[in-house]
Length: 311
Image 1 (cartoon, rainbow, N blue to C red):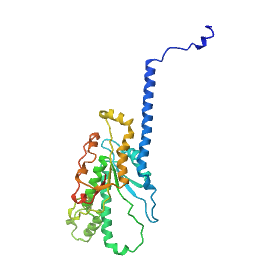
Image 2 (image 1 turned 90 degrees about the vertical axis):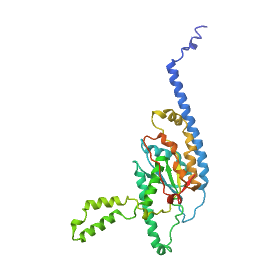
Image 3 (image 1 turned 90 degrees about the horizontal axis):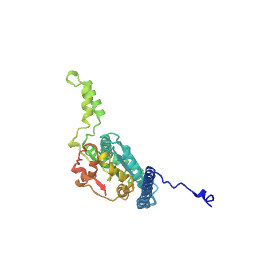
Image 4 (image 1 turned 30 degrees about the horizontal axis):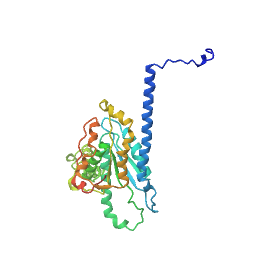
């Protein structure tokens, strides 16, 4: 009888404590990742359903889809790739669900986004100035409706928000005179002047002319038509100090749809109001995660009166 049951004898020794700990930790981590993936898909679907009806609305033959401009800047002490991932994971799905077009404007270095915003505002001011003089000539020409083009600016993170507002200030107060035009005019004046010794050198003209376009001139201050601004919260937790928070949010990334996703929904649904001075403190709780000093933005009252914010 014993020989017949010998094949049933199995090793009764349990795995070692280290092996059990290893497989137990792997099982817990895998379960947390699976849970986060499932909840993220559910939250993403819920957010997309809030704006999906917009994609089903009929459009006119000459009507263009709504388009927003997304501004990205790298967090202080980190690269822009994290801002791109934040946009791709939590903002882009909502825009796609609403069948909205978007254009990315990136600043890979600190201050680069501010310069791009400033140049864009200057171009808007030039176009507005030129359109006032040629409005009578072009009023009868057929054109496509552009009421839905450039309908909103989406700013991701506190750093992008500060640089965007700084660009608005500088763009509205900068001179509209082209620096290259100044150089050519001054060179012509120098060529026609008999006393060349009294004129500055070409190098001085070039340096002074290039810097003149950056000088704030209050007499030329003007505010073009501004797009409403949508602020998307972005918490870039870096450093050993915030390691516990990073681990927690790594396994609970679905919660980001409650912040960034809902902020994007407000942009899509056009829930806007007038911009106030209190809105300058948007994202102030993100500053503690930045490695470096970020100055507070200042906005001219004439810009405040014409700016709106999605909220």
